[in-house]
Length: 186
Image 1 (cartoon, one colour):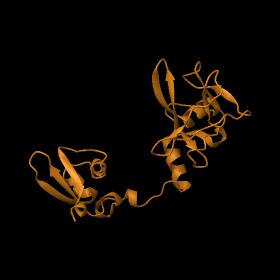
Image 2: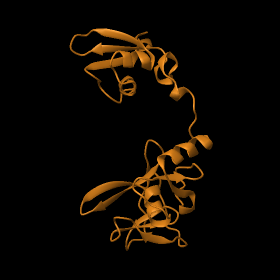
Image 3: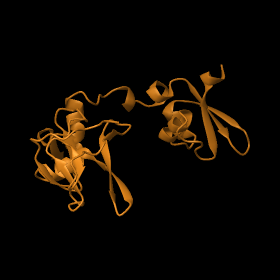
Image 4: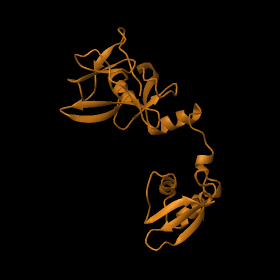
């Protein structure tokens, strides 16, 4: 949770879609119109800051960088993404944001080192998610299938990313199977 304070030199504009209720500052602060306190910002699991806007009792999660970009950065579009020029997801100053296509955003991430080619692009036994054996257990029959790598998972009819979520406790089952790492049995 990130607390923010009002800066008197900020430029404030209405929040796109919430013009009567909220204002956004040029540095990424959000406040209710007519109030001086700024909303508390939270970071999601990817590090992007968001606030919860509430109108007529209905809360809505909004990413701060998109609110700032809609208000201050020319070239807004629903199909476009907001890129943090310096790569720092918590720096939501309008001067650090730009509207880009998904392709441009990905290229920027690779060119700045925020995203690296390598292990996450491999498949099979060397895939970083599936080093070692994974055991699939049919919920109905109890039959176990031992797999090594994403290729084995796909060959057995499973979606490797969903198997990964099961192995890491984010999903209970996939295609009527549970999954665990073989080394967890040791």
